[in-house]
Amino acid sequence: MATTTLSEAQASPKLTKKDGKPSSTSHYTTFGCQHTKSLLSAAREQATSGYTRIIQCIQDDRNYSSRAYRRADSTGVTGSSTLLCLQCPNITHARVKHKKDHGFAAESENGFLFCHECKDFVYDPTFEDIRCGNPRKRKRIEPQLDGEMKRLIANNSAPAPCAATGLRGFYNMGQTCFMSVILQAIVHNPLIRASYLSEGHRKEECEREACTSCALDDIFTDFFSQEKHEGYGPVHMLQGCWKGGGGLAGYSQQDAHEYLGFILNSLHTANTASDEEEANGSSGGKDSFTSSDDCDCIVHQTFGGLLKSTVTCATCHNTTTAVDPFMDLSLDVRSGAISVKKQKLSKDKLANGASDGSKETAPMDLTECLDRFTSAELLSSDSYYCRKCAASQAATKKLSLARLPPVVPIHLKRFSHSKSLSQSSKVETKIRFPFAVDLTPYSTASSSKSKENGKVANGDVPAKLAAESTAPRIYDLSSVVVHKGKIDNGHYISYARQGDEWFRFDDSMVVEVREKEVLDAEAYLLFYVIRQLDEDE
Image (tube, rainbow, N blue to C red; front, side, top):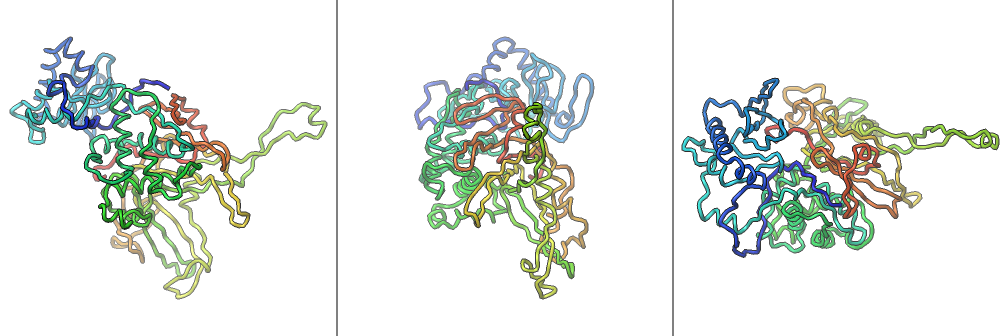
């Protein structure tokens, strides 16, 4: 479906390669976007003089606009940078228009120009010369670009149209819907998007064959630099999947959660492993991938969390702890609870013995699944050996989130497998999930009751993990993956949020939907993104 809805971009569009061919245009872009062009054409003197005053204010040592905001009815202080309106004294901490015809603002730290219509920062030579040309500029403001740098930008970039919002579907290339829904979740992940749009992976420097990171780089380049609304065929991503995905190769239907694990592993390997390590397989295995809790690649910085396991002996109450990395949370879904839904039947049907009710599985809340995941579990003596007692003992095991990552994928276990019956089935229980969830109650900091001299009793877990701030960790829903149909002949679709609007992605079809449709979906995977990052994250 063709749509021109603008997204809330998190990074400026990346450089779009032109195969080394010299540009036939001028040495640098005349205008940052079509909106700055209209502004400068209609009121250049007023716009430049107003921007000059803002830059002078920002570069003044007595400036407090970087932390204070002012509206018509109130003032306040914020911990983040603010936006100074180019057309009036308004200062805001939100990237939204305060007046319909006030479309530009300057960022309070460096003076970067923000276009409300593009919903992104724009590079405009006229305003950039003002920003960088003031002799009283701060050291952190970059010097003015020289002629060689301008030629480099012109020869290796193309203007990003305002309609290039990333709202595109993927063509189904033979039961590849499992891959499409995960790629949509990645495309709409603000941290991954910002990394790839800022040259987080340089395709021209990569020599790997069928590299999934290069394929993802192509997707971001095509989605956010061209005004296209038709579907996209991720051929190179499919090749990478077949080359390194083992059982994912072929045209049979696959599990979306399994593909999520594969693509995160593959992207981590492509962005960190050397060619020799990749050839030997020393950096591509699952164990190596999940144990890289200190890895600084974009995958681990986005999805990498720590799960703490605490086992307490029922006899001597000795406590042992362990911390393991995780990239997603797999939650059990209840399948046995039955409720009765009343139905109105005619007297004739009742006289013939028809039931006035039908059985259906009672719905669950996502918080109930999380409660079950972090609640204490009884272990039999066959499952636990206490070193202090030197004998097998009964015990309790409890899980908690020692470190929460910026993005938490939640996998709802809808597919159950019975070894005794040698068959698989799908759990149809409806899971009620919110648009925002506080994960603080499930963290180690919230569940820990006592600490002794900065140590966890009988554990090797650093106290800083158990003593993290208990400030609310609010996560907003970003994407939803849905499996429709039965286990052997189903189909995947997904929902993703673009700004304040929700869209349904069904292969190459993209449709704007109401929030109610999203909440009514039979979710299989949920992607939650933290609302505000801490300074050390």
